[in-house]
Length: 293
Image 1: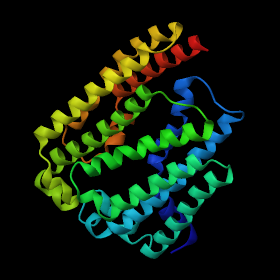
Image 2: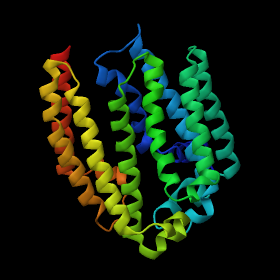
Image 3: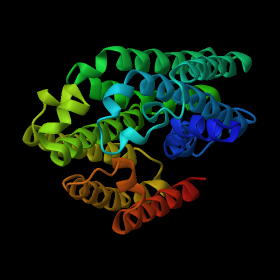
């Protein structure tokens, strides 16, 4: 194998399409309309890099653990470790290096809470890969916790204290996506879903769909409570932004009900009506921040 192909396989294993998830470290400063400490933006960027390294380590280890099962999946069989493009031993070595970099960044800037968030993400994710991904419901909560830890890591790095409502919105939003992923897998693969992800034998489409709707409604309620607690100037804009957010969740629910092997993330970024709702929400959200500033 040439160095170029090896490097391409290594990068593919770290899931470049998932890298935008690490932008969640900017969520607390964005919602608070402040960068927090002096040079807060730079600290937020470092937090994003730290979680980028941590998530890369997790994906590398996960692909090694799941290699045999991935070979029987219509899409995952093309992953570098499953296909043999990246040897398992190389993936493990890269994972160790990436995990060390994630911890080193937090330690290097003297932020123990960022170290704790990154370490918590690594530990929970490795436990997930080793065993807990086979425990129903717990595995979805662990997936969702990874998103929330990114938010907390960004808040720790920038010294921005997020509100409890904001944290609930982030946590419930992540859980909404996690439940939707399981529902989409079950409806798309049917009985074969359990062969690719054994925990799926414990789930049924009906309860998952009800759970997805319930979590979505609860998330919207928490978002509205957060919006109502904003300053006078921002309150109106953020309350109105609840509408496109609700439409986005509704559209997302419709997309996850279709039979497809497309990753859930692609449904969020590759659907026209979904993007229109996201842009409308972002515009109203930013308008509120501008008025508050």
